[in-house]
Length: 387
Image (cartoon, rainbow, N blue to C red):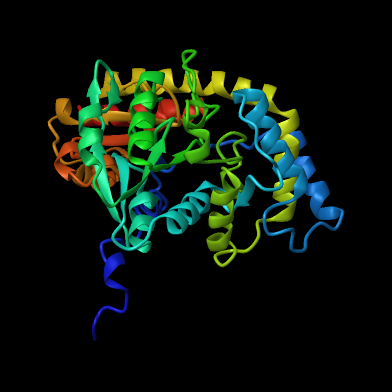
């Protein structure tokens, strides 16, 4: 019998995260692959979710999101970035940022349209572009002086007559880069010149280190009116399982996203929405302490990886460290990642699965540091076995 899956999705099997997490469970390995924290978010936020459940708020909420979360998101964008959005027409709640990105791409790019992505890219980007029948156009991020960046000339060269959108992830997973104002200006200039919409994945907006500033692309001249910004509560408040995200954009783009999203999941968990609204309004001080803690964990992991023989790139944000495996005598990150549980009892993610140009990422693996200190210490001790 022929493969029942539609042709455009046949390159996508089980996600690398599911594969490697299952491998961690099967082998009892330390999972530094999937990016989820070992601990929960602020206690008062958890209590707010429990109270929302016990108080009877368990039926369908409004499709666009409960008013208190939409208002809290609008207030956050204004206070933090000076971006003014109408909570009723320019903020829309989604099942995590993943659905927000998916609904945005499906709404704004169709068959034959092209979407520019920066590679390595989060794996859902390629899948949802394929679902839309669109074509991805990758622009390479390369390490330069210890951080990953792109060549503006390559970005301009990626634009063609069918280009509709640029998908921008900053702080960037998996590279750990936080785009500078100059890099964002280069992206904005291309969008303005070619009348492109920008879809921005900003889920790690609070999790930047060493006083690195996250600058939303929408704050640049001429970009608010052409940017669909996506973020979520999951990473900010260490509640990745809640899958509560949001889109902020001009009303016409929100209507387009809503047209798609309402037929995907219709609504998002009402109790988690109310708890996320509480957290955005009351727990930013907790997030500041989380950021300090994660910076220390990042340094702990980088030091350990370097001691184990890797070349580690110190990220400016996110949960992840990119590590070059070549100093240890390895060249294929996928092969190493699948062997690593047996070799060292640790699971990582092979970065090459996030590239179109696989050879460019074959020598990198990604380690997560959003774990307890003792877990990180044990993992790097085990990784010393590779030397």
